[in-house]
Amino acid sequence: MAIWSTYRIAGALDVDRLVDSVETLVATHDALRVRIVERPDGLLHQQVRDVPERKSLVAVQKVLSRSEEQFERYVRHVTASEKGRYWDPEAFPFRFRLLEYGPTVHALLTGFSHFAVDGIGSDILMRDLKRLYVASTARGTSAGQPRRSFVESAARQAVARARRSRGTAAVPAFPAVPPLTQFDLPTPPPQEGGVCSRQSIFSLSGDELGTLRRLVRLNGCTEFQWILAAFAATVFRFTRQDRLKVSVPVNLRTAADHDVAGMYVLSIPVLINRPGSQDGNPVFPKAVGAALLRTIATYQKADPERIEAAMATAGERWGARFLEDLSVNYTRSSFSSRSSAQLGWSEYAPQVDYAIRGAGLRVFSFPDALDFHAVLDSAVFSHDSVSDLVNSLRKNLTSATDGWGTASAHLTEGDVTPLRDATGAVVVSANLRKIERALLRHPSVRTAAVERKMADDGGTYLRAEVEVRDEMTEESVRDYLMTVGSGSSQTLAPRVIRVLHGALRGAAVTHPGCGKEELA
View 1 (cartoon, rainbow, N blue to C red):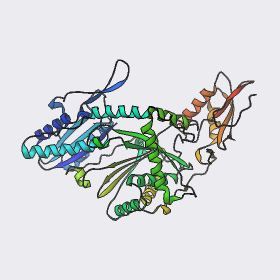
View 2: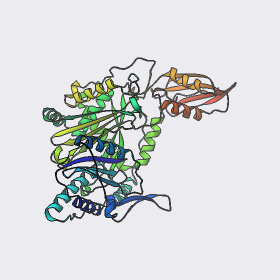
View 3: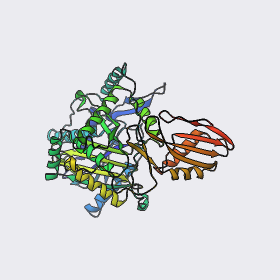
View 4: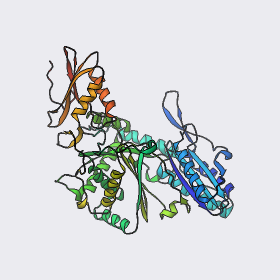
């Protein structure tokens, strides 16, 4: 994974001074010289290297094109190719590539690996690169200002996090985590050429942006919380589930590290409940903000790996592999305007296909604009459903919350059985007939029956009785169904599976929270 940007540089460019500026940038930001190495004990750690040779800093290429339009098409092609390349963790975590159409038209491609740099760090680096180049043009030198060390900063944060986690409460229980998002939509036709994603790009500025930011102030939340709440309210229209799991990147920089380029971002899953009649939409953004803050606090107090393992275990109790299939990535630019963020250069927009499960939203916030890039799974969303979702999102972003539609709408008909937690909230839905048919397709299965049962806590779960021909266990049945379910979200693995070996009746596997099972 990497952060790629492509900029069109209009006007005369001194290539040697640009390379000088890149060399100074790499020397002053140690994150650009980091590599991941494995110690003898098997643990990974970061190692800082010297600045690489000058000739390897920027790849310069003259492009012969009949027109500037043809040059731009070539730039988009190169950018898409770069995004698809594997990034070796042993390599330096940056790539600069300069394409020259003529003396006054260049395109600069920049790539920063997520091994070392996050989105905020990329913003810092590109801002510094412009400053260095402008300064070198004015003074003839390209001297960088001293920077705090990213590696030292990361080490201090790790020590502080370990100190906070000692003596704190254990990782909290996650009893009703949806393992995946079940979009209830008609199956779309396959995309031409095997394209994985459908995309939509739109912007809010002028009166629309003013309306959104006025609503943010009136509702007492942040801009990001408002966007996250609007996104969740939109997704609720396309699913029967009453709880969503939305991954958001959280910046763990301290105040002292605000200007340090590096990788400080951690993606965390936030659980968001559909607003009920007792709270309603007017307080929904605040409820979403509270859920976000609780999640951040949990990750600050305990080991993130233990939290993620506990959440995945809780999610898979509901019969499906744990997926991060909803995400909102929000970046607030430090530049004064959208045009300034592009360093005085206009930005190319290459068409890149993304492999995605579910739906993702990328948001860039500027003082004068909000840019949105929605990427959706083409195996789930048709062209019409993408338009419906994006139009609904845009309406929610710029309207009062009492007008938000969070009730499920346009859902397909089918034999769907909701599975609820102890509060009555729908966590997932299952198609019992699909599960039975999936079981019967297995060559070792003779008969299969699936039913919904009531748990001791008032929730519901699935129970299956399966007769098999050979030595097949409850766990192998569950693994088989979870593998099949990766291609069909309503084909879930029952929480209780009773395996019958021919005339012998086997024992049932019962998970905590289920009703009691009688052994035959």
